[in-house]
Every structure is written in structure tokens, then in C-alpha cells.
Length: 178
Image 1 (cartoon, rainbow, N blue to C red):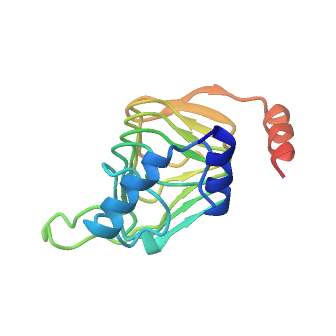
Image 2 (cartoon, rainbow, N blue to C red; image 1 turned 135 degrees about the vertical axis):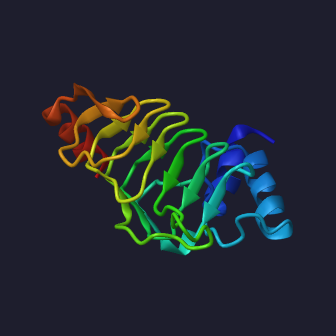
């Protein structure tokens, strides 16, 4: 079967062209048969874990957990804007455990991640953090506070701004996606 036929089949079933058929077959086995991440309504990598997927609001072309090893705790909610990418082994944690009662979760604001963001491998986003549009999180960063101005690259532990992006260039790119 040629690549044209594969694309036709993917289009017919509304599958993403950049993902292999094997990805979708593995997703089917793990979500539908083994019931791992069974509440998730989109395809995820079999090594990713998503708690409370019903509390995740995702934008256009956003598939949390499609990279290997992603961990998302959405107890307090997670919002992810359009065209945002989540790299391998990223952790997005919307709630901590209570310090006294380990069975209970703390209440906090939801994690909010803007449009056109990118989280590099092994980055961790902690409860209540807000990242504005075009915030790039470097590999291994631990984001403990919000970066509401956006248009920046953050990295480190704790994360801090290491570079600002050209706002006009970013906005022109975003306009091209509309």
C-alpha cells in the first residue's frame, strides 16, 4: 500500500498524518483493551499517564500525552492553548498532596498554558502556573511561578527567563496558522 493510500485511510478516520499507524494501534490496545488512560478522548503514548482527563481543556492541534512518558495530573484543571507541544517526560501537575493527609489533594488555580508554547523534555510545570502565548520551556526546567508576559524562553530550576522572542515575528507566524 502506497503512502497516498495510508494518508487517505488516516484522513478517513481523522488520524494525524505525522503519527504512524502503529502509534494508533498501540493506543487502541492500551486504552481500549488494557484500559490504561481509558478516559482520555484522544490518542496518547502508551507510556504516558493522564489523571482526570475530563478536566483538560485543549486547543487546536494539541494532544497532551502523545509524547512518551508524559505525566499530567489535572485534578485542579489544565488548559492548553492552540498549537502547543509537550515533549517527552514532561510533568504537568495541577495539585499537590496535602502535607498532613497524603490521600488528599490541595486546591489551587488550574495550570494554564498559552498558544504556541513548547515544553522541552523533562520539564515540570507546577500547580497554579500560567504561561502566556509563545512561552518555550527548556528541557529539564522546573516552572514554579507564572510567566504571564509570554514571548520568551525559560529554563532552569527554578525556571527564569533566558531569552525574549520577537513578538512581531511570533504574531506573524500565529496569523499564518489562522
